[in-house]
Structure formats: C-alpha cells, structure tokens
Length: 317
Image (spheres, rainbow, N blue to C red):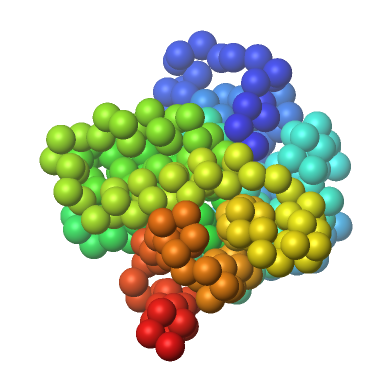
C-alpha cells in the first residue's frame, strides 16, 4: 500500500502542524485528506473511519471509537469520512463494505479492519497504534519494546511483511543495535523478496551483533531464500523426481522450491527421503540443508523437533 497517495500531491511542511492543532476528532473530506490524514500522521497515528448515514453498524462503531480516541489524550486522532459525499479516497482504498477503518502512520496505511468490532477489539486496535508510535504506556521501556516486537512478528506471520518491517525499523531508530529487531527487519525483507537489501544489511551488521543468535537465524533464512531462488518450479521438479527417483539433485532442488512456497513439511520430507536414499550424496548436503531449515524454524518449533527425531532415526537405523 506504499505510495498509494503519491498522486494526490504534496503539502507544505506546515500542513501537518496545522492538522495537529485541530480537534482530536474531525469530519474529513477527499479534498483535505492529504493534510488531515497523510501529513498529520507523520506526527501521530490517524484513524480514518469510512461511514455513511444509512449504515447501521457505523452508528454502533462510531461512538465507541470516538471515546477510545479521546481516552488516548492526543496520542492518536480520528478522521470520519462520509463515503457518499467523498467517494474518491474510499475508491482508492477499495472500500467495498462499511464501516471500514484504516490507520495511518508516517504517511502510509499500517492497519485496517471492516465491520463493527466489539470494544475490546477496538481498544486492541488503538493500543497497537500507540505501540507502533511509541506512545503506549511505558513508551521506551522494555515492556513497550517487547509489545512492538510481538506486534511486528504478528504482522510477519500474517503475511504483512511491509508493516512488520516498518515496526522493526522504528525499533531500530530508537535502539540501533537491537538484535531481534535487526533480524526481524532482515526476515521482513526476505518475505518481501528483497534479498539484495537483506544481503547488504547482513554483510555489514552493527558490531555488537556479531554473535547474536537471532542474526544467525536471519542469515540462515537468507541463505535458504537465495538458494531457493535459483531452482526451478515445483511442478517441473516433481516431474523429474517422479521420472527418476534417484535424481538426487532434482529432489534436493524440489525441497528448496517447496520451502520457497512456504510448504515447510513437504520440503523437510523431500530432504529426509534424500538422506534415506543416499545420506552421503554430495558430502551429506541433504543433512546439512536440513540443519539450515531447523535454524530457520527455530529449536522450539514442533516441525524442528519432530524432524530431528526422524533424521536421527534414519541416520542410526
């Protein structure tokens, strides 16, 4: 969603300051969107509530959302946009159902939901924004940092690597040598396919992270991603293995291709089968690749635990 509003034109540097001086909750419009939302969000997160007078759920959501914004005491703002009177921005964001609520920070969308959520979920939504902006309770403390790391991991797990990367980068702005955040930024770049940038960062990490375990895991993930990019499509490799079961290179490449598609168990199965067929192939490359997979998964991952047992069973049978 980055760059979505680049075509709407830039505002003068004072636009954000002007928006910040206004009330916490205001009626927005297509014309004022850049000033009220995009520019204003460079100072604090801005929530945009797309609604209409005929929308029943909107009437349920609005008052609760307004109360939570007021309770934040200026740490977050709310702009309400009637889509019947202002259809342009809603169209750009592909709003198809209302209420639709988007959160902006640093000039870009960072979160959204559709429908009238219960108050507990609305509060969690606002709290995530406060954490992202570093305005939550105990901002800058260990608890706030841990919350931000958990939130970034959640976005990464849900496939929103861009938002995860922004949170990791924000953490690094405050703590440049934070190992988990630096490794998280690497993993978010890998998930977005930006292997070149990930490699650049890994080749010159902060000195204090030289022996960091999280960084070692990120390095393993990048190596696997770089390997996977060089192999053929899964279907083609599956055909080669089916035709020639002892084509060990094809089976090895198939494991990498499956891993690249997120099919972790299938990738592990392919390598375990290769170890079973010829454990010494290419200087035990299949076993070594399994170890890399385990490094990426993490030692506590259930797949790592079960796969290590299966590997031991094969090696010592």
